[in-house]
Picture 1: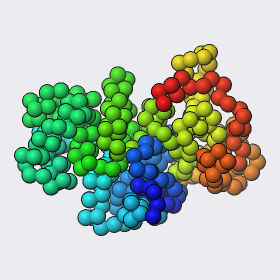
Picture 2: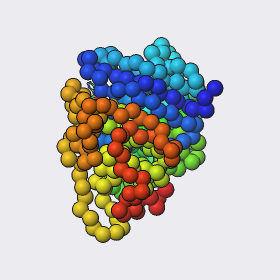
Picture 3: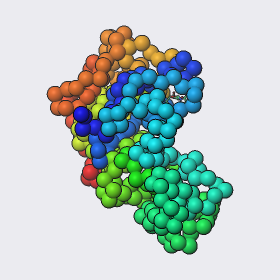
Picture 4: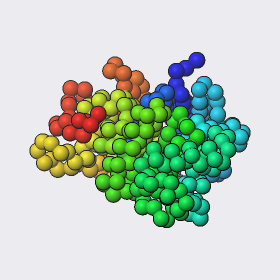
Length: 332
Ligand SMILES: Nc1ncnc2c1ncn2[C@@H]1O[C@H](COP(=O)(O)OP(=O)(O)O)[C@@H](O)[C@H]1O
Ligand SMILES: [Mg+2]
């Protein structure tokens, strides 16, 4: 029996014969918060959409997705419907993808509660009110009968989180939940996610390109590049000493509050098109540390001595610490 809540093994996804996810191995332990970072198009969303059976029919998926040691990939509709919402809930950047614009919000949340927990109407309504209150909607009783457009963007995101909590999930996948919001509201939603996890004990997968936010929420991070995990370790490891040149590049590209005002160093180039992946390491064409062999052979993700996993032939040396330690780590 494994101690993992969710285990992905060699998960692959192709669209129209083009592979975009090349064998993801990942585990989420009960109650833990795992960050998934990487530039847009690296496969962060597709990983979890595939795991939950939410990709369009044209997607070809292989590999294993285990929940509590039970295989759910390719499971029947009823198995997956029970998993979604009831065991694993997913929230997205755009709340309008989850809220129905023509239904009153209270009704939507009550129906989700009734569906997942088999409550009668009266009890479901009380629970919906409790959830609206829990996610910080002021005056929930009065606002129960309003429509989504009568709430601000940040409040819609709170309502979507309330919907996600309706089934008391063991794992919440938050896919860039704050990207569309302005900075103050982003911070409030992050605080809400941190508080909810502390109060409910649910595990969280936090998908974001905002490394500061990831460091506030997560204990562990996976860095993805072009459909693969390239580095995986604790927040402290990744933030104080990223070893993969891509991970290092992501950190060098974020502004620091402390230290000298160094110029930000963006990673040159862009994520490759999955149709035309370079031979060898996918990152080699953009990599400052690439050597001859890197464009011929692909490095596998392997555990290294300090417990992290790394896929690189020529990683940043362990002693070469970050020039300026990230101030954002203070939030950890
Ligand atoms: N429905 C789809 N049809 C075809 N290609 C898709 C679809 N969804 C995602 N992709 C492709 O899969 C890759 C990974 O996408 P995605 O997981 O959305 O990236 P991320 O979430 O990291 O920004 C990208 O190359 C993207 O273009
Ligand atoms: Mg995405």
